[in-house]
Length: 334
Ligand SMILES: Cc1cc2nc3c(=O)[nH]c(=O)nc-3n(C[C@H](O)[C@H](O)[C@H](O)COP(=O)(O)OP(=O)(O)OC[C@H]3O[C@@H](n4cnc5c(N)ncnc54)[C@H](O)[C@@H]3O)c2cc1C
Image (cartoon, rainbow, N blue to C red; front, top):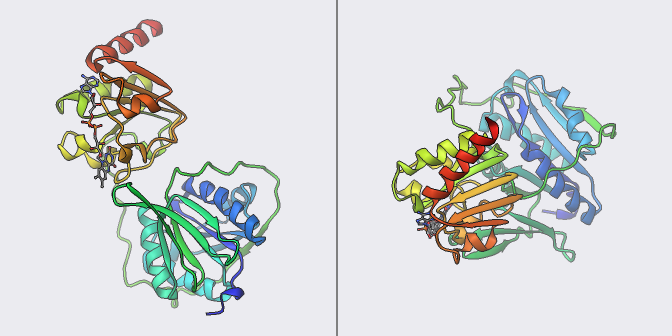
């Protein structure tokens, strides 16, 4: 493979129910930096049904070119159709790097695409830079439970297909009125046909706020002492309009479902406010929340790592501190 032929940084704009997921703005931040270092262009691939109206938003956030695959065939994500269409485009345009969100959809797409293109996949990375001598990506990902950071390289194949952890990079700012090229692509339904058929989408019926997009999170840890402790966390979260998070210790104990888990093997969050109650703050938990804007820790142990990291550390029993704060908020609101 003559890797010198491959130029440009591409990002994949993932959609859910016809809307862009904000991770694309994070990809645009890191993509812009890589494109600058390589002195190459920055493009986005947008796929879906009736989605070309979203292209300007991507231009406003820094994309110089937006490739649009618009067809009922792409209304719902189907690995096979999406990967066939992307493969077709990549073989024609030869991008150098392709950044994809490390979401369920992105992970599935990236691995399939890398195999189909016979290139390398750099999975779940949290730092990206360019090796000046070779132009290859240096992709950093954590492994062995967060105890080790490894730098992954794909030296001899292009494009390097990368999945980027959500919430690690800030979102690219919007500068309305930017100009860029929007290119509508031909869709050949026969060529991009999938053997899998979309039947229907069944939403989770929990009515629970999702931690991944929450601006405020109240999390509970083993310091709650028992599963009923989460009732207090839920009450506290409700009064603040926050989502409920959890440490892995509580998830493993079956006190709360996995979707609430924050951390290395849970989810990465970046809220404006993160309140950790009875969580010690082991490295694997911190890996998922240390980029939060303002961190409050409530813990009986002043030496707990999260108490050291927090913007405000409250030393005390959470069963005394939280009800006192709830009462004070109620009093101020009445
Ligand atoms: C490969 C691997 C991946 C992992 N991934 C994750 C992950 O994604 N997320 C994650 O969270 N963990 C993860 N872990 C586990 C992690 O190492 C810790 O074991 C876990 O985070 C501890 O949870 P905790 O803080 O709730 O419990 P503990 O460490 O037991 O801490 C409980 C805290 O509560 C305090 N406390 C006790 N009683 C009270 C009270 N009444 N009031 C106030 N404070 C009180 C204690 O002082 C203590 O600091 C992972 C581990 C491994 C090996």
